[in-house]
Image 1 (cartoon, rainbow, N blue to C red):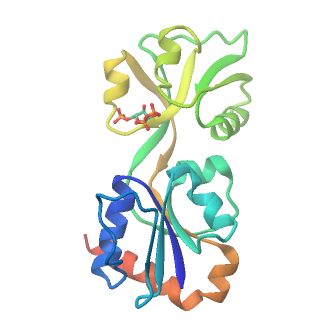
Image 2: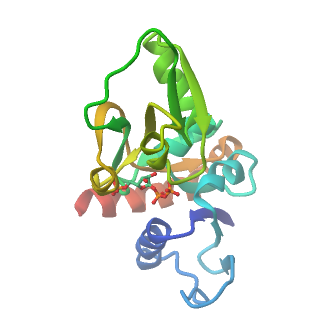
Length: 208
Ligand code: PRP
């Protein structure tokens, strides 16, 4: 059996759909129930629906053999897993944003609000810029508006949230997309099965 951790939500459903059409369906899967585990003995797969940011933990600890997760989460958690494939979905950018017209005061540490503490620290370390991190769990864009921070480090997809809050991108840190990851020992011991799933996904994605 191959255990697959899928992120709850649109992306997870999209990846499931591809796998379903490629011979890895779970007949009991329906959108309308609250079930979290789906098994199909015949095609040898079990799916878990997990919170997107928990996918690397399941995979790193071997509860799932493979999983689907955003590059942002992988980098932030510095997960010890193999990255097998860029699924080219969920594309967005990790950016530094601030109020329109923002000017940095370089005489003091920059106050940075973010969910992505490690990514922000690494980025500013590389610039030799001292920062004070304010860890938030959501609605990051609020921080500079009420002077809780000078800037934010956050995900920008369409740019709508920034625009509607009179904020703008000042620096781009990295491009993000969804990745297929594998547990390191599963990759060794279930190599054939994992590669079959990877190749299936790769074929569909690259033909799209
Ligand atoms: C993310 C991100 C931004 C928004 C960007 O938030 O943190 O707030 O999406 O998308 P946009 O550029 O298309 O407007 P999410 O929806 O995950 O909610 P959050 O506030 O809990 O982080």
